[in-house]
Length: 98
Picture 1 (cartoon, rainbow, N blue to C red):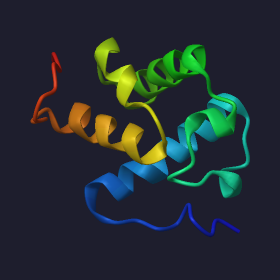
Picture 2: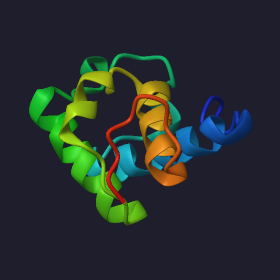
Picture 3: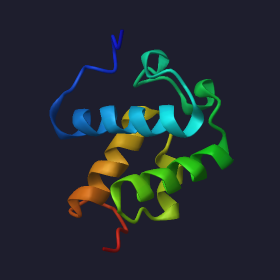
Picture 4: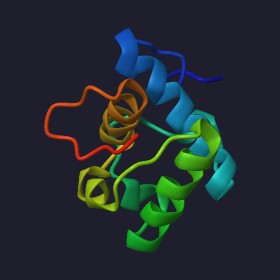
């Protein structure tokens, strides 16, 4: 069923699975249809949707993600990187406030 959703590689890979879960729940998408490298626009997530996604991730994971990181929200993998940085707190180039 979850052909790509089950592929986990290191810390970012773990977060990709979490991002897929949040995206599927927030935008009512089938997680099996979400590919890690597909542009968010192909999933129907536009600029307003990215804000909604950022907010959902903050609530789901109880973290704060700077709005300036929205430019990095291009696909599931890049969103997972931002999430990993927010959760880790030691992000290179991140403006994260904890």
